[in-house]
Length: 336
Image (cartoon, rainbow, N blue to C red):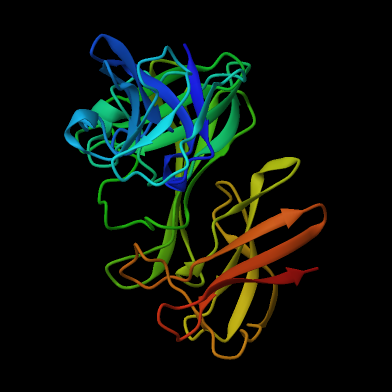
């Protein structure tokens, strides 16, 4: 399937990779969507004398004075011109000769409000995993109905595989997890299963905890094989960092409720408890900056992450100043 690279347009938002989605057509010609986005710029065939059109959205009429770029009826790619108020210069269009992104097997696009029809939402952080000897990206996602789903993308074969739970949800209450940060998936490392951490949450008695589970994803249905709920030292934790070479061992940072101290903790899957490795005062932010909390979070959990490069751990904190609009920064601290 062809895809096209648009570059050099005076309207910089029109530049990018345009590809056909789900076999969509217009006037008996393929419709190419910028980045596969159904609500953005479109490359489509109008008719003589304008021919192929690049416009803000599909269906803009280039014969009625609506701004667009047109190639005047030539076959793609053709020579392009600016019409009716579109910002010059006209773009250059060339065929994409690199690998074409694979078709998404469900209609249109990833849409967070109706995933059974449209594909994964971004509530649960995906992960790389080896499943049934295939190197995949695993997307666990939550349906509004009676089951949850794992979608696997085979990175070598560019194929998608859908695995549903059998009338079972990853979690029962959509308010009991962390929707913006620590809800993550991980590879178990045995070729058949995924870990799923439902993130930091508060119980009815305001005690912080997370739920950790293991799911088999090799068959048509996803099945849970283990489950554990662990008390947390604070609700302000980073996403769990899986230890290289030890898939069942995880580390995370937990900031005290008063924001003054931070502890490095270790969790071994289904061990039943946490181990405190070390604790230190929270480093001061640059003058005038304050810690940012997750925008999707009613509890006000910190927006931060723990990453590892070789033997060094980095604590990355999202902060902002008091200007309008605020200036955002990522402040890094290293941990031995």
